[in-house]
Each structure stands twice: as structure tokens, then as C-alpha cells.
Amino acid sequence: MKSQRGFTLIEILIALVIFAIAGIMAAMSLHTMIRAHTKLKKTDHALTQLEMTMTLMRRDFSQVINRPVTDSNGVQQPAFLAPGVGEIELTRTGVMNPLQVSRQSNMQRVGYVLENGALKRLTWGALDEPPQMRAEREVLLDDVDSLQWQFVESNGKTTSVWPSTDVLTQLVAPLPIAVLVVMQLKNSGVVQGVFPIPAQGIVNVPKKKS
Image 1 (cartoon, rainbow, N blue to C red):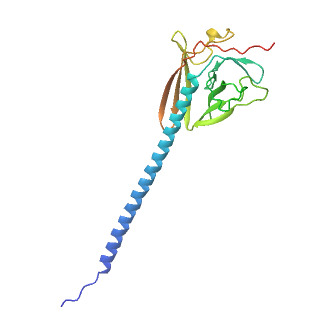
Image 2 (image 1 turned 120 degrees about the horizontal axis):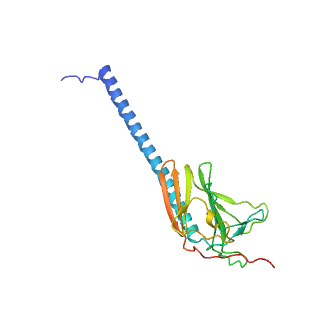
């Protein structure tokens, strides 16, 4: 009966090398899977943020009403204001009043601005601001490289500022008939949105105090 031969040192070393290579490949595969999963989660989060942002914009623009406001300096501002620096302000209606507070208006002043690569939504606590009132800021999107607005006039022309120069002398400037937004996102490229303004022409001017 022949005696069993043991593994030689070279065979053991070869086996160890094979196991080491297999272990490295398994670790690399696991690392790749983790990175892909993390990237997918980030992508899902970014898409969710973008969808929420576009939904908010759609709601705000669909509820625009032509109600001028008074800023914290006592200066009357048009209901829809876009000075051409990436910032926009508007008066909207349709704000819910779940507690049925009689003095709480269903109108609100909101806005959008790009600050330090972040798209923020602005909200004011009152339409006609008391002195020193500041808007609250909520970050909607990160990694925004640029933000551009275009406004469609009743004649079909577009402008990047509102009120346009043709209506600056009017006491109550009309609303645009639609708003176009173009955002350059760092990881998603160019995103565009078109929002009609159904209330174009509806005016709600605050009554002067006697």
C-alpha cells in the first residue's frame, strides 16, 4: 500500500496565491457593488429633489395672483417681480388655512433664488412686510451651476426681467402668461420647465386704509 504524499511547499504557496487573488477580486467586486449602490441612492435622491422642486414651482405659478405688496422699506412692489439677477418673487393664492384662522390670508409671498450653488425657495410671513422682515429660505436643490428665467408676454415675446420695460409705468403691472426656467445642474445637465399662469389678468389690489 502506497503512503499518501503531502503537499509540497510550492503547491501550498500556489494555493495561497490563488486564494489571495480570489479574495482580492471578491473584495473589488463588493467595493464596486457598494459604490454603484451609493451612486444609485444619490441619483434617486437627486431625482426626488428635482421632482419636488418642479412640483413646487408648478403649484406656485399656477396660483399666482396680481396682488401688489409693500416691502419692508415701505415701497410698493408688483405682484410678480424678477429683476433679472436669477431671483424671482410672486404673490400666490391657494394657501391652506387648516385651523380656519379668520385673519390669516390665503395669499402668500414666495420666491426663488440661486445662492452659492443652491436653489432656495423664499417665503414671507406677510404680504405687506413690517420693517426688518426677512424671508425664510429653504434649500430645494444643491449643485446648481446656473438659473435662468424667461417670461412670456401677452404678445408672445419673451423677456428675462419682469415687469418688462413696456409696463413699468403702470400702477398694477400685468402678469406674464407663462414662465420658462432653465437650470444647469452639476450632475444632471440642463433641466427646463414651462409653467403657464392661469390667473394672467386677474387683479387683487389691496384697499387703501382710510
